[in-house]
Amino acid sequence: MVHARLLSDGSAAASLRAHAYAYATWFYSGCEGVTSTGALQLPGPNTGAERLRALGEVLPSDWVERVSPREASDLAGIDIAENGLYFPNGAAIQGAALCRSLLDHPRIRFASDPPRGGIRVLANGCAIAESLPELEVAPLMGQVDRFDGGRLRLPVLADGYARPAGESCWVGATYEYRPWPTAEATAANAERFRKLFGRAPGASRGFFRGTRAVTSDRTPVIGRAGPDTCVSAGHGSVGVASAALAGEWIASLICGEYPPVSREIEALCRVDRFHERQRRRPNPFASGRRRER
Image 1 (cartoon, rainbow, N blue to C red):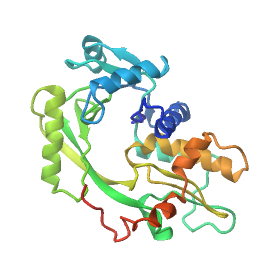
Image 2 (cartoon, helix red, strand yellow):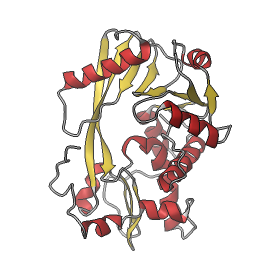
Image 3 (cartoon, one colour):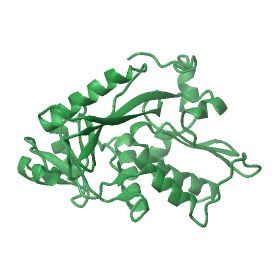
Image 4 (spheres, rainbow, N blue to C red):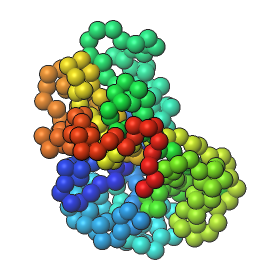
C-alpha cells in the first residue's frame, strides 16, 4: 500500500516520511498494478487517537481528511466506531505487475550479470550486508493472511492493516523478531481481523511470508557508500513509499544534481552513521541474528 505512517512531531523522520509519501503518490500514479483506492487510518497501538488528531491538523488538506465514525464506515463499507483519517491519494499495489511494467520501460534494461564500470547501486534488501557488513541491516520476518468474510472498499490501517481482495481481505502483518510457527502468525492475524470487523474471520485462503529489511534505528540507508557505490536499503515496512524517493535521490547524486530532500533528511539517512555508533558499541546485527526487544 502507498501509505507511509506519517508523523506530526516536526522531526527529520517526519519530514522524510512526508517527502516519501508525496513523491510516491505522484510516481505511482497511472502505473500498471496500482489502484488509487485511498486509505483509511484508525487509532492503533502505535498511533493513538490523539496522534491521529494532531496529524489531521498539521497535514495539508489535500493529503488527509478527518472523518467521523459514520464517514469512516461509509468509506470502508464496514461499521467503524472511531474517528479516523482518510488519505485520498493512498493506493494499493500489485507488486509483481508494477515490477513487470517497470522492466518493460524503454529506458530500463534488465541484466542478470553484475554491472561493470560506472556507479554501482546496491538496492538488494537484506543481502546488502554481504557487500557492506558494517551496515546495520537485518531481516525481520512477517506474515499476512487472506480470510473470507472481510469485504472492504479500501485499505484500513489500525492494528496492522487490512487490504481488500474481492470477497475476502489480506490482514497483517506480524513482526517476528524470531520466526513464529505459521499457525501462530495466522492466529495473530485472525485476532486483527476480529478487532476490525467485530467477528471471527471466515475460511483461510492462504498466507504469505516474507522479510522486511530493517535497520537498527528503523531509518533507511540512502546515499553514497563510496565514490563508485550508492545504497538504498533498510526501508522496513514503508518501502513502497520510501524506495521510490530513494531512487530519485540516488539518480540525482549520480547526475550531479541537488537531491530532492533537505540536508536534515540527508543527515538522517546517511550511510556512515553506523560507523559512528560502532565506535561506542558493537554492530548488533554482526552475528547475523536479531536481538529480542
